Image (cartoon, rainbow, N blue to C red; front, top):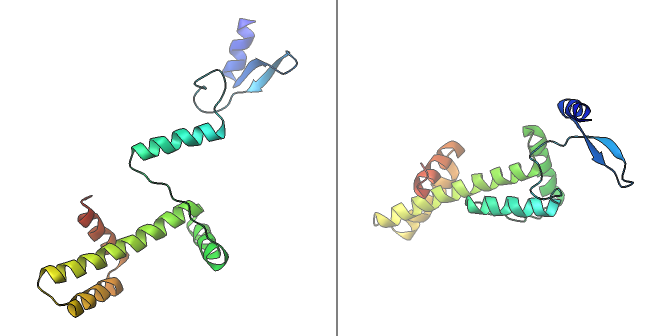
Amino acid sequence: MSLIRDIHEFIGYTLCMNSRNEQVLAAKRPGPKPIGSTAMTATERKRRSRAAKQAEGYAEFVVTAKGLTLNSIDALAFVGNQTRSEVVAWLLEDALSRLTVTMTAIKATFDGGGSEDQAREAGEKAATFVGIERAHEIAQEVLGKK
C-alpha cells in the first residue's frame, strides 16, 4: 500500500477518506499544508493577510463607485490588464502625488516670504504643469522615501 501511496503522491494525487469513510484519490491542492487539521476558511486567510499587510505599513480602504466612475475604472483596468484595485490604487497615488507637489510649492513660496496670492499661483502652476513622473519623484522626496 505504501508504494501505491508514493506513486499517487508523485503524480500529484493523495489517498484520503471521503464522507462515507471510503478511500478515494484526491488531487493535491497547491500551496502550503494547512496549519491545523483542516484548511483555513476564506475569512481566516483574509484576516491573516490583513494583519500581515498592516504589519508592513499598508492600510485598507473601502471605495464605492458606480455609474461613469465605475465604467472608467473598468475601462482602465481592461486597457492596462489590471484589476480594479490596482487601477484605484494607481489613481489615488497619481492624485496624491500631484497634491503633494502642489502643497510643497505653496509651502516653499510661504517659506520664501511670498504672499498668499503668490503661493496660490505657485500651487496652480505646480498642479497644472508637473508631469506625473516628476510629481511622483517629488512626492517620494518630500515623504522621505527616496
